Image (cartoon, rainbow, N blue to C red; front, side):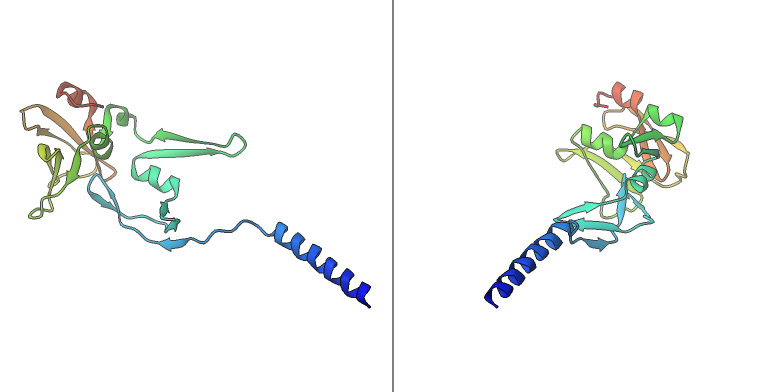
Amino acid sequence: MKRVIASLAIGMLIGSATVAAAAPNTVQATIAKFKILVDGETKTGTTNQLVYNGTTYVPIREVADLFGYNTNYDGPKKTIEFASANETVAEWISLANFAALNEAQVGQPEDSDDIITIARSGIRLFGINKTGFTDGTESKVLTEDGKTIRVLKLKDSFMLNKEDLKAAGFKI
């Protein structure tokens, strides 16, 4: 009888170890819906985001679309390609990328929903008045030292002309 109980216990131990080894890796994440801002503009996402260990995960195809890019996925090669949805994008840089490259901050004054200010170390570089902009329209702004920068509204994002930025002494 002792032998039967011992063999049964060993069999159960091996069986439970096999089941534990066969269990898939799982994670616990929270589904959330965040407000997405691109160049100070609120974007409407079509999917929920996941939050796992303090990091938010957003579907890459949706983010690419928000920034004006098409995505191509090649499963066998395990590659994701981003291609500009608009040929003119090569001449332009997004306001967010410009700010990151130039260590600048993008914000809105508390008293105006129509103005976007770009500043570095608390010093205003230039501002963009959003009034009258529609998708595909272009306008000009002046930097604080009088340089002209062309601004394009593309897919609800503000894009800055790279040539103008370079002429004004900014990094691109």
